[in-house]
Every structure is written in structure tokens, then in C-alpha cells.
Image (cartoon, rainbow, N blue to C red; front, side, top):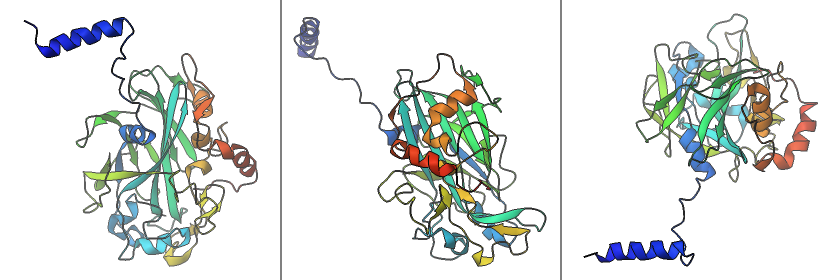
Length: 346
């Protein structure tokens, strides 16, 4: 004898077959915040605790731009070493979409780009480096990661994942972007790394922890490292386009000196005992630029489909029409401003 649940299932199947009932809907597509969290990197940060500008290693912690409670970029060097400020781990993100791909840009921010010697290198207030991930929409819930471009100062580096169908285009592929499991979720994440002091970012292990270091894991909470050699610290993502966020504050002259460039000065001892201290030297994603390459200033974030098509050879190509691009409304203004913006110097 059939039980009630079996009878109901058979009846529902028959009705569906006759077009008289609607089958249960498929799972909802992930939100952009969920996409960003799913693909956010496991991030290795090398730490150098030597020298007065290192703050015993804290100068290498990733954090929010407003870690000190305000949106003044010109006091971040000073306040990074003061009590009462939070160096809880955060990273910023934005998402752009086409019919074929998702593009997620991540920004890792440090209050200081610093050195501990007097020879030929300058340091500066604020530091913004990051990575753009290109994810093919293959019909699965979160797609498949195909390629990445990282920012190390004024140079971009391109990577593909193992087994990716993508290969070099106008630029050679610089290596493989590895994936690893996180202890805080069930996904494999790309693994990136930043050097100490200057914080250039590449795929791990092209940069790696050398001695002390922090391993940051994407999460929905922001933890503060217990010290300079903490190998399990969770970081929280912040939407660049959130209300009151970085993009909304792009006209704030206390935070930005010009197009996508954080405001920074020489106060608080920046440059003391070193070769010098630069001003207005760090950049947000819409200010990132590799001057030797074809893509324009900021296009790694504002037009990632174009950059991907130029950096990589992609079977079947990519759609260049965005179904969602939060930078699009200002694309013309950004392009015009880039023509007169100061050269990127980070």
C-alpha cells in the first residue's frame, strides 16, 4: 500500500506533466554579497616587526579606511600607532556582471606603506592594493573561477587557475592562482599574498609569509590579530558601494586627493629616518593603473570585461555588455578625469 506522501508525490508529478501544477522553484541566485564572500581570497600577509614605523608588526595589518573613526586620509599614518583605534580585519569589494561572467574586485587597505632603512625607497600614508577575479557563469550557483589580475604597486600581474581554459593574451600569464580550503566554510578559495612594508599583492606563493605573518580568512565577522604571527584571522567584507562607503565618499577631499587617490601627507613622522615620504600616493580600485599596459586607469574595476579580454585569450570570448556595473553611470567622467589625473606612484 502506498503511503500518503508517495501518493501526493505521484499526483503532483502527474499534474506537472499535464501543465496543471508549478514545480518547486529552483534555488534563488546568490546575491552579490554572497558571490563576493564565496570567492574572497584566503589572504597571506607577511609581517615585519622591525623598525619604529612597523608598529611592532601592526603596520602590516589589513583594516578599514576609517579604522580610526573618521574619513580623513591625512591622519591615518599618525593614528595607526595610537591607542583607541581598531585594526580589525576588513577588505572592500565591488561586483560587475555580464551575461557570461561575474567580475569581483577586492581592495586590501593598510594605514601605512613603510620602510625601515634610509636607502632609495620612500614610504607613504595609506596603501591600497588588491585583485580582480573573473568568474565564468557556467550555470552552477557560483560559477567557476577562470582568471585574476593582481595589483602590486604600479604593476598588474595576471593568473589563471589550474585547468583553466584561459591563456595569455596581450599580457603573458604570470602564474597559477591556487585554491585552498577554509576552516570557516565549505568552499575552496583563491589564495593571495601581500609582502610586508610595501604590500604588493600577488598570487600565493609568489609572495609568501617569511617568518611572522597573518593568514586572513573571509567571513562575516572582523577579527583583530592576536599578534604579528596569527595564522587564523577572519576578515569581513565591505561593499565599496554601500551607503556612506568609499564610492559615496569619492568627492570627500579629506579622504581623496584626486581621481581614486587617497589623500595623504607627511605628518606623524612619515619619512623620518628613511629616504622620504610621499604624499597622495595610495589608490582605490578606480585609480589603479599599470601605465605600461593598454587598459586605462581604473578599468581593472570599472571595465573588467575589457581588461580581461585584453589580458587573456578566452575561448568563446566574453560579453562586453554589462547587466550590472555600479561604476557605469560615472564611466565618462572617470575616463575624462583620468586624462588629467596625476601619474600613479604607489
